[in-house]
Length: 261
Length: 261
Image 1: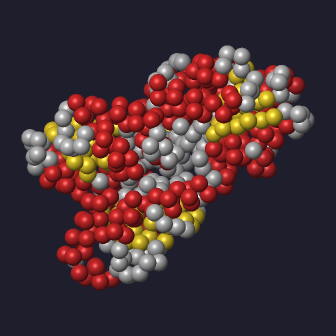
Image 2 (image 1 turned 180 degrees about the vertical axis):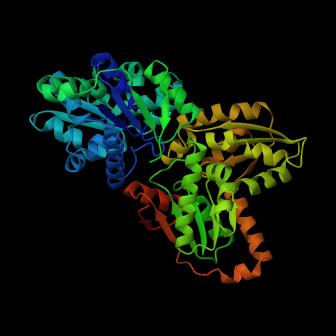
Image 3 (image 1 turned 90 degrees about the vertical axis):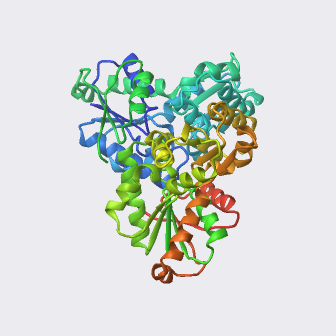
């Protein structure tokens, strides 16, 4: 199975992309809803949680792991690689590669959680082979709660988004990485506020394309992955609100299953 | 020691009230910053976390426990009483008693987290001996992240607060319980938006007065409590941001100590 974990339900955006791009594979999702969000937490805690999340997926049969959460990808990926032998994919690298391929004026913007932005990982990856690229980042911590409240089209959300994007707009970026699973829900509003000419990068899409490429290049691994639609959606906390949110975000009815962690 | 726990750092408002009203006693604080916030979580998870939080305090010598978090008070108090034999105080009952004593028109408003409001505990306590009291509640989930971002005086916060308070204002409440540790930071703005005639109840203050009364009535317990200012502030996750926030909220420098839970 392809295992996907996230700090909460936001990672369902990655599931959605799998269902669009690689719909044949059976998915196993784990959302750590009892400890969400990760984005303001310290590095040690994020590493510990990410390790436990991956462990849950592997115990239940995941053959490859996708870290859907940008904060966990940014902070814990290297650590996870030392802990597990299964292939692990994270969302930061493919998003950075895409942004580098897309930018013309070499000015790339990043919005993300505090943990993601402070990790400096996007800056590092974006400039690694491209010293002339300039990176402008802003953490946008209120966007996650706004999206989780469903305030997708409210004037307050517009004002707050504008505040977060203004410093990037001023620097005339031509590419913006939406470096948190929740932000694509605000895609339209982000596009309006940052300007129509700025290209948006959604890490969820890029990581699925990366997995696709990997499986094409590794047929022995690909052959072992079960192909069916008996997807499982595990969570560490289950409320009726979370259940509704999950179905709404995935675009179809989904049954979350609570497990004890 | 007097042990105080909270889902995060918001409970420092209770510490502050102790330092104003009962400053002689040594305090032991635990903030579960690795799993904050509790306000949107399910009942089972809140009970489990509250039990672990109380256990941490008791293991380190707490002789009485104060549940600073409204969500944990609302959901887990009865459960905690079945688990521990030390005296336990929660913030809901004293706040409800104060509101009942203060209201003239018998219309009491409550704003709180989703968990607190949905628990129905305030409604139950406020109307228990007063069937003619009417209770109007609204959950205000965005206020916690706004306060944690330090957006205490921003136009966006004003707009959002207005939205949350309007349904209570329309019902012409004369008393409002600020049923979350974070809300007193917005006290001034809340007062302006709800109207100057509405009396505000801060559960943090009421619970400390309750402890005071208890200790006066129970001198044998009171005598055993150490009196000194070697307070300890434990957290499950420590970031430099949390450290700064804690000092700012408490109004003086405080050293947080990270423990593994």
